[in-house]
Length: 137
Image 1 (cartoon, rainbow, N blue to C red):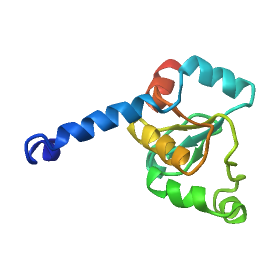
Image 2: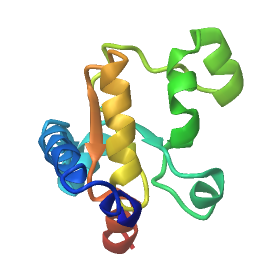
Image 3: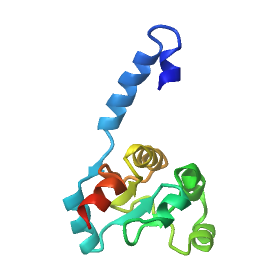
Image 4: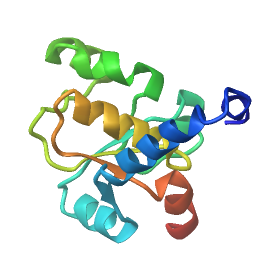
């Protein structure tokens, strides 16, 4: 962000307005709702943190796909996805395809990306792993 502030005067503000508008348009999941969805088996979790972050701890049942690899993973044919991740590829119509990261930013980006690719049930767990780890132990 500091680099952006060094640009020409006014160049960062239009982008900031767009980011804020877009951010409010992404469906989110709260911690109580996520717990309910998980308990009933109605959520598919994708941890978009790095492999190292996920190996140190994640939400039980989450599939780790680092955000840098997410677009190619979501574009894979189902057989390739299954072979690579040992899980069925999410379907475009899946409800409650929940993305999360450590603090919220990458999960938000992942949700935007998935929705742009046609995953209509993509949602962001905005509390992220930070909230989960603090409130679940």
